[in-house]
Image (cartoon, rainbow, N blue to C red; front, side, top):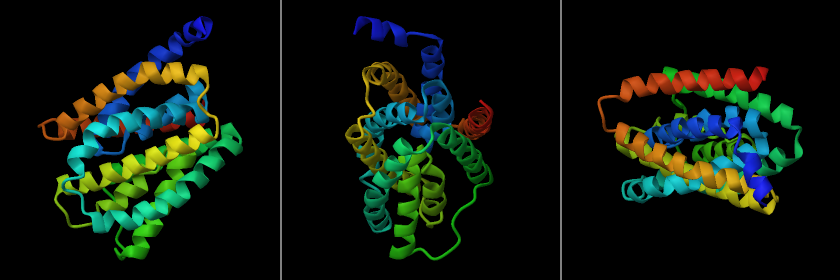
Amino acid sequence: MTETILATLDLNLAVALLVAIAAGMAHGFTGFGGALVAMPLYAVLFGPVEALAILVFAGVVGSAQLTVRAARIVRWPHVIPMMVAAIIFTPLGVFSLVTVDPDLIRRAIGLLVLAGALVIGFGWTYKGPRNTASGAVAGALAGYLTGSTGMGGPPLAAYMLAFPDPADVQRANIVVMTALLITVTLVGLIFAGSFHLETIVRTVLLTPVYMFGAWWGGRLFHSRFQTLFRRAAIGLLVAGGIIALIA
């Protein structure tokens, strides 16, 4: 066991720690962006399955400090149809992750991250009807993509931001949905046997750093540095997507 722990203390882990801070900040600021920042780089460092296992555990812990406050102002009629569909489709995404070729998953992650950067950068939102059926479709898509690649954030945000709610309520909706998505994904990965000893060690080391980043990002949401951080986050997404595609 000691040899396994020492084997994780390498350059990859050092890079992962730096990425964890940025990913946590993105999660705390936007309510969902942690996996978008970290998943393409972690998929290169550790492989897609271990990368998602690390991130969903860190995300569940990091979400706790955000979800308590968000649950007080969330628009439950908007969120509940998405939740029901997500609970059904997220495990299907996890099944795809653990059965499909890892290189294919990694390249899919790169493409989805670049698409996510476009969605966030241009502020695109859903323009169609907003009802129970559309919410269920959005939840199903976000759930499947979260379970298979960790990339359920962009369609979730594009749909949630279409509602004419204040920014803090929109963010609360996204925070609560993200917490559900990553929790269901975590349970699926545990049942799939994806948490090996090295994965657990890396998760224990990276989670506190991610949590600190999430706290910091939450503070930035209410600060004058919003524009600067948004641009930096988009730059990280583009870089991470390209790395996942060509590595």
